[in-house]
Length: 159
Image 1 (cartoon, one colour):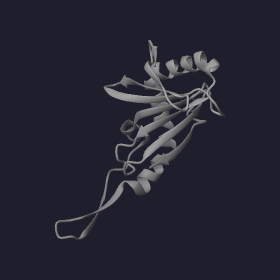
Image 2: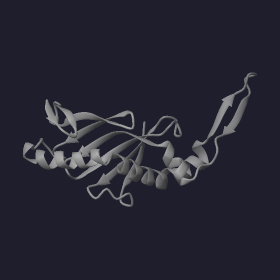
Image 3: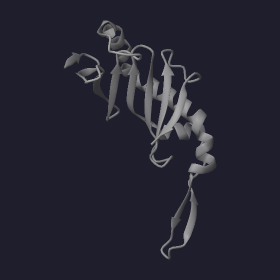
Image 4: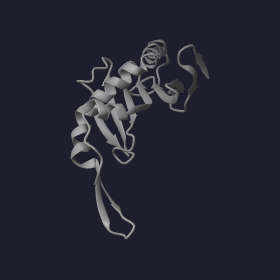
């Protein structure tokens, strides 16, 4: 167990990564710090990795906003065209189609919230976003390089 002023208690896992959690806007955000992205953990990288992780955790609001921008860029159209439409049964067993309102980018992004981070050495971070059931409970993952630029971010849906 390692104690850090910003990151809190860090637990070393069997694979050599460090895990912990921080509170953000009343939510517990779990994170995993992977010390080496190509092989065995390299403890020599620990100071730089911890510094990168501290920067990310200290700027969770900005990271969340950048992740929302990237997610809206890649998933908003899909939500508005198909995912917002649902089919349910009424009290007589007949199928009824319903649609939630179309969203703009800001409305869409406001529904997303960071739930965890996977930090890869100093190379980048994956941000797991809670989708507020817009995609049936699937998670949206936004992967950033070390520059944390939403233009360069890659996205995927998981679950």
